[in-house]
Image (tube, rainbow, N blue to C red; front, top):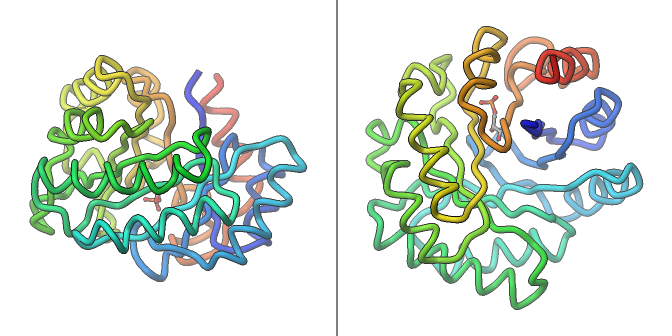
Length: 236
Ligand SMILES: O=C[C@H](O)COP(=O)(O)O
């Protein structure tokens, strides 16, 4: 069963996600980018309502530069604020060695606080456009750094989607390599309704969305009806 992660930016939107039945609530701040970080008090407050519903909380720590110390502190902040999953955007990370370095330190920072928290390294499908690490170098770096999961998202939200940058066999390969290396995997990047059948075929552990469940574009509001429709279509 593919789980659905939805990314609200406010308490109101988190309620919409829960009402619509999302599996994982992923607090982010789209104003600060693809994996933009929200404030600790927002993560904490959303976490309180999410936990009451027995759901899991995720938080993004930003589209990060190659600064392992800064990233480690941000990740610890998300963990302390209550996130079960801590997502790290490898935006300014150029290669496998840098990815290992940043993820190893983030993992130590999070697991020293609470070994049950899960660290997720995120690379970008449009890595060529931002001169960042290829998602295909992530399984090896992630395994060496002992992260729990890896994901692909898009860096630039300009209407192009995950499938505009990467083809189905490449995504299938990413999913298989993640699992062979002992990690779960997630796919995201302006996923739309037409992508759902192929995503079911590729079968990642998690799909991550925002735009598809917003009333009119990524910066507008999440609607519970759209979350509900997505949950229905993914389970059918
Ligand atoms: O993890 C979630 C992603 O940021 C998805 O957002 P998007 O559907 O707007 O690309």
